[in-house]
Length: 315
Length: 197
Image (cartoon, rainbow over all chains, first blue to last red; front, side, top):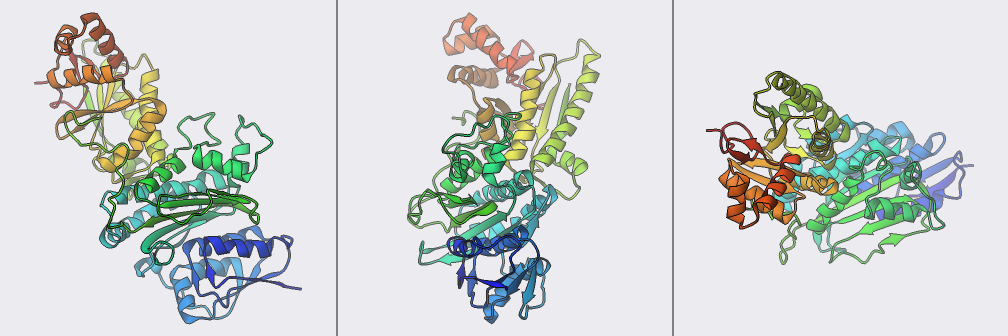
């Protein structure tokens, strides 16, 4: 018998936990149908994480595609069906695949497996990033370098640690209700090793009574610990750099791994708890990075290391 | 003897002809190894001539659009760490073409490893990274008035000559100043260093 997992009408980071909660009781090889017929909206995180679901289940899951034409069209422009067709048994009519490079999508869902994929993604998004972040969201042009760096470090997390491939997607939205501003969102999701197991592979790792997915996320995201740090003291700077970039541009970082999610926010954001534990289990790591439109009343916080150039200009 | 190494050319020649961004750790490691080979070649040639001035390798980032933390760590930090640890290495390294987007990841990795570097921008040298306040003051005197003897530096800073000598030697051990002309100078590309004229 096939069990049905209902995809919520609005599929994003928070509601994706509803999908995982429905999946949790079913063994890995259970016959399942992911029913997205009534889905109306999805963030890059929601779509990338859906692809990851297929990675962790034995056999091909059935997937009923959205019924609403706008939703179908948008998911197609995000490149979802191009990858989903290889991972799921699709039910329903899917729009013909189109090249998403010239669409309104900032970066369609793109597989990340190796370093070359990171180069390709960063190179492809650079021109669009200047247009969106500087031209449309009103940020100083200086943001684009940090944006590319953030995207690169987030994607490298897959290459360096996941032990399997993952997906990245980027899009802009109007966060009218939650923030009253437009945002750019980067989603980087994999169903690989995850933070806890990655850090446990560090020869210097000491397991304590409170060691769990939440503690592992705190170590990696907040304290910049990497499994490679015993051999290489330079490791672990990527996530710290992402946090610093988002602090400067008043953004938000959330990282989910296993049964926990850590959120690093700037003032003015929603009051999400910094660390949520006991979530429905899901392997790997799922990152969401949100950069809001520049607010009219506050200039971006200066980088702690910003300095004038030229003679004597160093702090 | 001096050599200027264009990182953009190294990147395209070593990793991929189409890349202009220094991203990913494996790319950074490949580029650093190629830079180390070039520097070792020049250093080897210089060692054959005992009277030759110290080798200064200037790493030029002007053709690099984007630099991430992993590449900053692999290229800048590891290059400085290896040269700093190798007491037999007779040369110095300086940087040029760094823009503000490069400086954020570079300063982060310098802080992480307690390193400092000399960067040339519009013909002026700048010091980035972890240095004590008195080291910075001495370095700035050398930059602005070099070649500067310890006595001249001490006089300008109104400090004891012995103290100035100790700090200048500390800076030299960190490859942030070098002997040149009649005193200390800041390492950099030929023609820009004071004392080169």
